[in-house]
Image 1 (cartoon, rainbow, N blue to C red):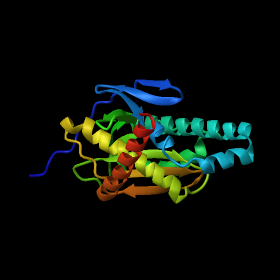
Image 2: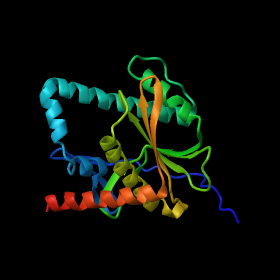
Image 3: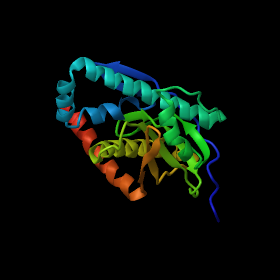
Image 4: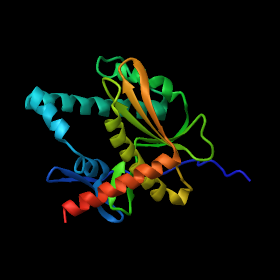
Length: 226
């Protein structure tokens, strides 16, 4: 007998706090560090520091703030389109990234929830971008993660993205287990201005492997703050 598709998932809003520059979430199991805080606190940032020194602190801050604003706008644009079909008006900052991602969005058969907060017994939490049925999904939907970049992301950056997505997938499967959710595929869609997006598709096996790596980062993060 074929299992029924998941018809809907509740959306849980984020309750975020910041302490000493680190983000955490209030969850039913208590305060949990954010996925991004764990990853940023356990990776080698020497390359980033060298870059900041090479361009200057003021320029580096401007670039980082612009990238953050751009990413937020891109997420908001996609969410609105998935919820009510509204296409964004032209603007010089957002439209080139929208043009990159738009054709991929046609693969989405049915979105279930966008920008939902989840948590995990490993004491981490975060907000995933989208859970949706793609045109080639079976009984279970996929987790989708939206990124923006000015050029193809290098393997080191995609590795960090993959750890993030694996953590969100495991947390979503935990939180939505009562609804029968068991995601076994995730896609990272990196919008590149007016070009075909860079897409990284993670299988069930890869998600398991990346989750093991993320668990190691959680342990390192926890030890450093003990």
